[in-house]
Amino acid sequence: MAPHNYSYPFELPLPGNLPESVEVNYGRIFYRLIAVVERPAFRFDIKKVKDIDIKRAPLASVDDLLQPTMAAGVWADKLAYHIAIPDTTYTIGDTFPVAFSFCMLDSRLKIRKISLVLREFVYYNICGADPVTRTYDVHGVGQMCPDECTSAWEGSLNLQVPKSTYYDCESKFIRVFHKFFVEIELYQDNGDIRLLHVLLRVGVRSAIQNELSQSPPRYQQFTSSSGMPPPPYSYSNIACA
Image (tube, rainbow, N blue to C red):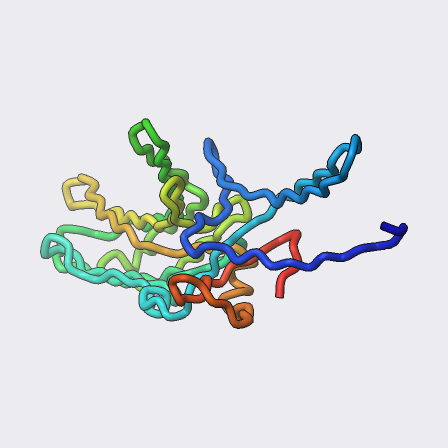
């Protein structure tokens, strides 16, 4: 071959059941593109390796991504509560409001404090070992109840999704999901402290997943054995149509 720049475009359809790339404490799923140029005679082959990130974009048709997250009820016939956030999924780096409303039904109890914690759950399933789940508190905030609102209190607190947070992912081997933990502290006339705990699910996605959810990639016609097109993925360090 004469000296020149040669280009060989190709496409590599990915199976829809591939786990997405993820790197967490004590676990990693990653992909590498390996290109080999075979040369004849006694020349060594040329081999190049490039890491590829594969991220699955959340599908807009999933019902639980369209409904706001909220919890409401009456605790022990003593406290009526309502806790809600505007959306179910947020991007790493976002700050989102948590609205709350409390009404005491027992005059012997007063509201003292509310605390919020964004909690990260990482599930590991390694072949030959028992599954392990680890939890991490990634951000927390709290507020004391004003003196004039100990019987009825409405307000809002902001929770942040720090940049160190991992985005949600689900695979056979590693699963990451998030909940925010609400603690309402009450005190009785005799000085005893009572605690009410509420857990609510919240989704966390990366900036690339957020971009793909707003404008998913267009696929050219592709025929597979299942007849189904591949799911929307994000690729870094590789050009694709």
